Image 1 (cartoon, rainbow over the protein chains, first blue to last red):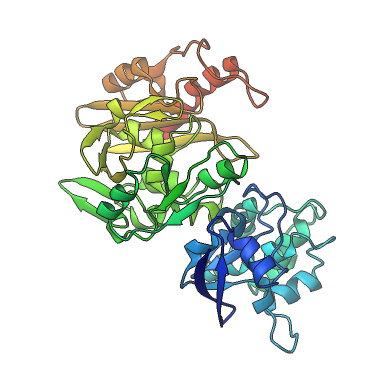
Image 2 (cartoon, rainbow over the protein chains, first blue to last red; image 1 turned 135 degrees about the vertical axis):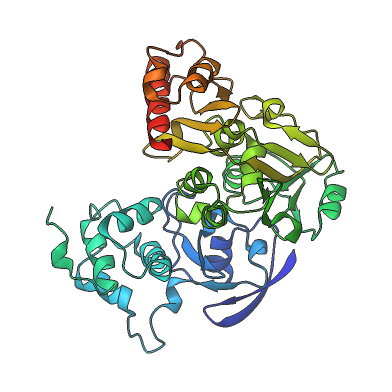
Length: 161
Length: 261
């Protein structure tokens, strides 16, 4: 067991964990932050996507120890404490950018990372950026619309499909 | 995963010392190694994490070469090597954004996956792979699929890329994995052209010497004429037969030459 410390959604956390503990298991099992999901567990689907020091990473493919002293952001930190959705979450709701919702935490966190780097992405840039996030329900179109809307752009510019 | 310990040295020397343990294995970005451990295809007793070593993080231009620390992620390389646009573009198209934020050039070259992109850039550029003990020319480094000239306990510290007059990497991405079904890196130097092919051969990345000769005489897609690579020795699987991969090599080489201009 090794003691590790990191700041998760603004709160300092310290726990003893076994070295092979994955970041996603640390978040879900040790911190009980179960909004971050395990989809494929093979770093393809992106349901486990969180931010480590501001960068999008797949938390199923990183050891918790590697996030020592890091700032980690998960889906739980996106809405306000009072439950007010942030602009990205609200856009996903408004444009129905989900069906079952399993991939949504990863989609929201990926979108947040995209908009940090590129505040007004084109449709192609959105689709390209989200290629590591799988959704098996929506066909992606409403997700792309939601991201477009969250970036303050007019979704009418996206062709209906 | 089988149980193991992780140690996180802060210097190259400390990492090399930790790797003297025969049961230790280096951990770079982990984008290949962690899935491998999950599948129980590796059973190290100790993982020596290289991500905390600042010496491995630099990118600098020295003697006309771009020198990239082994721990530089694909995302950082894509952002910070504007002097070599073909290399930056290759890095920007590996995997997906989250994978690019963790995966490193040193990890990719040490693993030498037969469908990885960086081996094509290193071999196509005539790069030098620098380790804690020596400098290895790319021509001597890639031995076979998942096999390199690295000795036990030896770690890559830096990769030095000579900068060509023109270059381009043309990749036909396997749609699910984003690895190269076939990828061709073409680089035109003052003294000749290099063509490196990944994703195709059962032996891993290789130079297409006939194409190099033709392109060194005239750097144009037409110069390749009817040149083809025989399908014998090419990989064949559900994603593409050996004939198809061989065919793609010619197509992608022409595209790379046209794009490199």
